[in-house]
Image (cartoon, protein in one colour):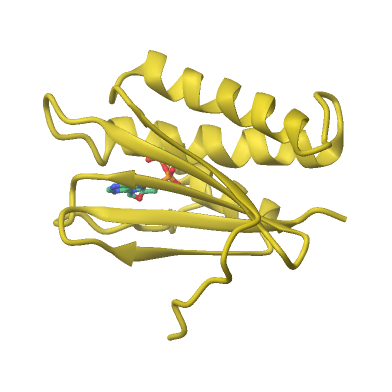
Amino acid sequence: MNTEISTPLDELTQRLSATPRGARLARRLTAAQLETWGHPHGTEVNDTAQHLVAELAANAVTHGRVLGRDFELRLLLLPENTLRVEVSDPRGDRRLRFAHREDDERGRGLILVTLLADTWGVMERDVGKTVWAEIGLG
Ligand SMILES: Nc1ncnc2c1ncn2[C@@H]1O[C@H](COP(=O)(O)OP(=O)(O)O)[C@@H](O)[C@H]1O
Ligand SMILES: [Mg+2]
C-alpha cells in the first residue's frame, strides 16, 4: 500500500482530551479551519468535513480511548485540492469493524465515513493508530 502523502500546503494539528467535549471541539476546530481555507460554515465541504471528523473523533474517544491519554486531530490541505483529516488514538490493539446486520444500531459511523469520504483507511503508529479520510475540495 502506498502511504506517501504530498507535502501539505497548510495543516492544523491539535491534541484533545478523549472526552465527548474533546470530540465536539474537534468538530468545531474543523469547521473553523475549513472557513480559513475558503469553505465557510454552511458549504458542502465544510459540512462533510465536520461529519467525518465528528464520527472519527467519537470513535477515538469511545473505542480508541486509553484512560488519561489524549487523541489527536490533524487537518491537512493537500496540493491536489484535497482535504485529508486524520484522527489518531492510542489503542493499537483494537481493530475497526463493520456492522454486518442491518438492524445493528452500532457500526453506522464507519458506513457514513465510507459514503462521505473519497477514500479512507487506517494506519498503524508506534503507539496506537490513525484513521484518515480524504475529500475533494471541488
Ligand atoms: N478508533 C477506533 N478504535 C477502535 N475500534 C474502533 C475505532 N473506530 C471504530 N472501531 C470499531 O469499529 C466499530 C464500528 O465503528 P462505527 O461504525 O463508528 O460504529 P459505533 O461507533 O456505533 O460502534 C466499533 O463498534 C468499534 O468496534
Ligand atoms: Mg462510531
